[in-house]
Length: 337
Image (cartoon, rainbow, N blue to C red; front, side, top):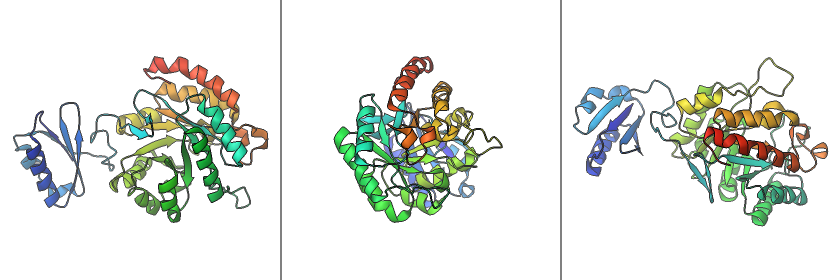
């Protein structure tokens, strides 16, 4: 349920209304919009009589939200959420570009790539320290050593770091050391992990599950937000379909759908979607043209020798060429790069 207050409602009246709502055992989230205040009610709203709320002289409208997600709902907050990461913003008019290798392999590798990306104005550096792999015999990442190397790259370049968390056991380490915590596709419905991340005041990059519906994906964001952390970035990374030519199928339609349903920023991972380096360019351009808030791209200085996903990684030179193309598209969709 959403309560829209009239323009100019006094602060004490807002607090009084919130008090009434909370006394009924419901949570109330206040959002300040363009001249109006919106109170979002979370919980079993069947115990509340909307007509009584409507009788309040400061209430303009009471609306019922049909979707199961509440805090992430566009009706709760009409303005797009913008997430601050250092001196960069994710969401809004400026496109976010996160780039880096699939896996951290060495100090020379990650620092070298970070320095080449820094010169392009990239938003953040991605790199896997803990790697979830289908096969237990595949490279699993350098783990804590890899995280230390990411920190060195950050110290050398000033870039924020993005890396994937695998377990609740590492929450404290990631809260201390990582700027944007990534939840991978396989952990999208790891609800214990999502609940713990909801207690942090840290941006969370939430990837869509391999076979998750859009509603299930946003509901996972809701798990994080229900704990008090509204800094969620959604990431479309392709879903599993009958097609076998590509690694996954990039769901371009998810971008405008998410924009309609939610106020959260959405970025696209064309590397994991296609699994083929030559497709990163066209899929990136398509994502920006469709309204995505940014991209997360795998960039490796030597893809042929990469320990993980070299076949879908582009070189720093190819990445720079892609940026030149995106700079042409961005103004067309009223964005800047």
